[in-house]
Image (cartoon, rainbow, N blue to C red):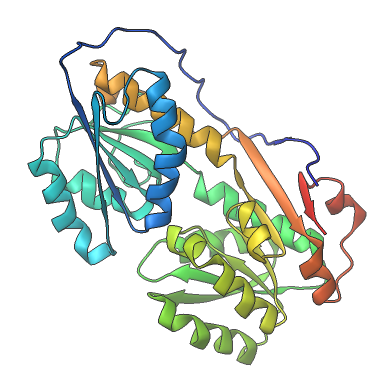
Length: 317
């Protein structure tokens, strides 16, 4: 059931006001899109493109949407394909940001998820000063917040497994968050879905008592599979997005993705109107969603503390 909107205190930039500028009637704008999963492309089509249409950029009329999906090793080549079509901007979702920004210093790149400042691709959030802007999800703070909620929900669990993408900085982020909470974290990197069963078997063998599934588009794509493996392993799980609780995670906590996707459309519209990406602030989340799956809690024989239950925006029963 829907409760209330949970507003958290992470710092964010002020959303830029909508402005109404007439586009040249004969001008066709091209928006490239690079992502690791078709699900993230679908979200851009469902949320960002309709919002972009409200700004006057309508697919099939004055906008061409050119999308590519692929694994990390194929992204440089896919980005070259996008650049060959001379786009006015390229959206880079999650891990696509680095290959996208590496491929061009002139075409505007609008990131969603990964942090251009942390990656050294922008000078600051307020004034990026480069060809990269976008919307970030504040991974460091959010992983700490998710772990905190997990420990409030299962306070007797102190040996926490972390499922993370291989060859990423997620291990350091999760270890730092765990150290701040005084818990032991067991890190299990995976490079592909074929490695999930072995990772969960290792969690059981090492005595993991709960699980955090870190932020990654592929983990969202495989959410139902991962939730099923966690339930089989008897692990209370906290995941990246509220909707992942509907897939079977015990807890889903993350930014309001619809809001962030719409804010990304605002940035793209500004670029189409001639604003330099280096002058468009990188935005951070200000609105968050917390979903709790009581069906999973019952399956794991857990009693969720009232203090946690009353804070949830959505309780799945």
